[in-house]
Amino acid sequence: MKRLTMFARGKWSDVLIAALLCIVVSCSKYGNPKEEANSMPPIFPDYINVTIPENIAPLNFEVKGAKHIVATISVRGKQEMKLSGENKISFPIKDWRKLLSATAGDKLDVTVDVWTDQNPDGVRYKSFSIYVSKDKIDPWVAYRLIPPGYELWNRMGIFQRNLEDFEQSPIILNSQNNKGCVNCHSFCNYNPKTFLFHARGEGGSTMLTINGQTRKLPIDQIGPKKSATYPYWHPSGNFIAFSSNVTRQSFYGISMNKIEVYDLNSDLIIYDVRNNKVITDKRFCNNADWETFPTFSPDGKYLYLCVAHLGISDAERAKIQSYISQIKYAIIRVPFDTRTGELGSRVDTIFSPYRDGGSGSLPRISPDGHYLMYTWASCATFPIQHKEADLKMIDLRTMKYVDTSILNSKDVDSYHSWSSNGRWIVFSSKRIDGKYTRLYFAHVDKDGRFTRPFMLPQKDPEQNGALLYAYNIPEFIKGKVHLDKDEVAKMFRVN
Image (cartoon, rainbow, N blue to C red; front, side, top):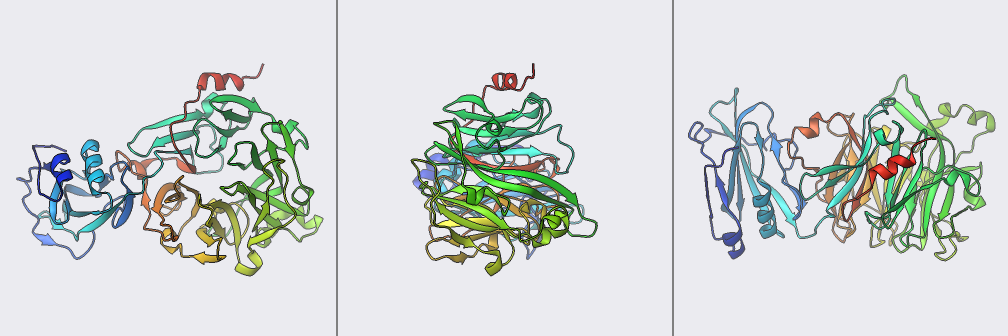
């Protein structure tokens, strides 16, 4: 992109006059487009009519096959920015930040002109809007990058990305863990100094960081000696709920889904951080039911979890692969004693597969405690491998469903997290190609109404299509994680 001239433009507001520069790009070679299309521009990623936070990184985009592109940004009819590129539009980050800061609560109107071999005289597409919300988003998100297959585990890591620009850095790489698996990172109250992750394989363990100090947590050697799988922190930081899962996978011969990941057994355990002990409840630690994906309410007074009552014989359990379609998980809620870590006697069923159909996974409660979002699939407990998987949400005040149709696609929509202010969600989706999960963000207002989701912005928009790794377990954090990787690597060494 060449910037030939820069000057202030328009009188939309005193703020814009003082803060914005209009970038004017020479189009002498191409002139003005001679054709107008009655359709939206074929930009990738698709940022048409989305709502974004005022502190998000630039929404750079591309038009595949283009020879030249011009994008014009206007606010209330006044042109404020004009850029060009060969087949990509890249916004200067400083100018983008000024633009969004001045436009928060309003919208950007975007017009895209495209020249291709098929349209050498240029086409002007219909304008679209980008709405700029005053609700900011947490500045960082953590996720795992992993090959999307079933056996390539030798190169993976847990990464963090600054959502206000394009900085990405590793929190931990499995090259530091003897090529073992690193997974299931979880943060306490979005705190980058208090979190955990699992490191599987030789020298592995649950790695627990509290106030920036990291230690191994050999939880499978404490109390009932059960392994820890899916974690969730109590908001006090004094407890961590885990499901203890024995997980396997099988392959379908004829199915729209390729792989089924399932449990041979799973129980609930609660780790008492202060007293270094494991608490169990026989109702949720037995062979009759399988528990998974525990989640605390933001006030810490309830524990939510997914539970499947199998209703099959021991002989049938031995051939569990044949009964996957019959395994349905409910979402329940149990009172939690914040002093002792014990569970109350009352059990409320929030989602019932017998009443509502399907199976529930990954319950997550909004920070205000009003909404429960979960992933729905036809059966089982690993929705990321189910093409029919969708996001659903229940208003906990009325126990009625909230419309989430704008979030879902024809392919997998799965793991999701709430921002700390409850105004944004991040979730993973395979909607682009059915193979790679990518990250999407959507705004939600206090009444539970969602806006059209947008893909994680990249400095080079081609990266969203070219990256040969899948995003996994996106979690918002309020700052950057600073983990002494050399010290952590030492913990993995086997003498």
